[in-house]
Picture 1: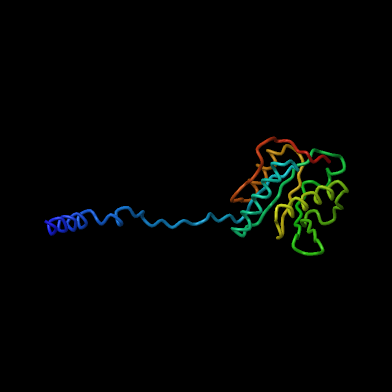
Picture 2: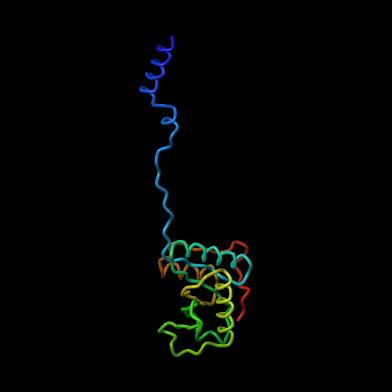
Length: 170
């Protein structure tokens, strides 16, 4: 009687596979997405600070470049300087600001320097240590984000969801 039970079990295992083999999931290789360039919308509000910290984390694990865009309300003093692109080296002891070639001769106003300082502080607080590019523009935030994303290829755009208004006033 034992032989028949053993034989029928062997036959069943040959036909359907052993129980341990039949419950195994197929091997699927999971890889993390690769983001080379990330755009983060920043307006100084709590949700944009959270978005900045998410971008810092993602850029850390995927070794990606981060561009932070801030859209200011229009002001007479900044009309000649905006839009401006500034690269900030956060890792160096002496901070170095690189203004894009098209704005090399333009002196940054006190207000723009204050905005840049707030953005640097927020980037450091979120854990960023590399070179960060700041895009400072004026106008409608949604339009400016779309415009920049049409000009430059971004793999990921991160922004808060509470409002489309800038707290930073020029």
